[in-house]
Length: 94
Image 1 (cartoon, rainbow, N blue to C red):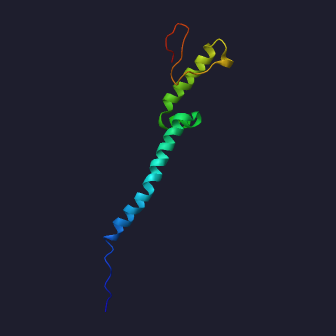
Image 2 (spheres, rainbow, N blue to C red):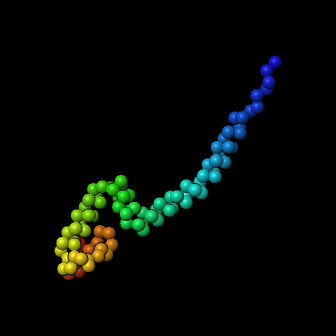
C-alpha cells in the first residue's frame, strides 16, 4: 500500500517568493549604496569607469594631465568637475 504524497507544487512558489521578498530590501539597499559610492568616492568612481568605459577614463586622465601641465602652479591646481576646466579665456577645456 502506497502512502499518499502531499501536493508540494503549490507550496514551492510561495516559499521561493517569500525568500525573494526577504532579499529584495537588501538588494535595493545595496544598489542605492553602490550608486552613492560611485558618485562620491573618487577611487570607486575610477574603478567603475574602468569597468564600464575604459576609453572615456583614458581620455579623462589624459585631459587632467594636460590641464596640470598647462597650469601656472600645478602643485596647487584642482579639478572643478569631471570633464570641465576653466581656461584664462573663459572657455571650457577638455
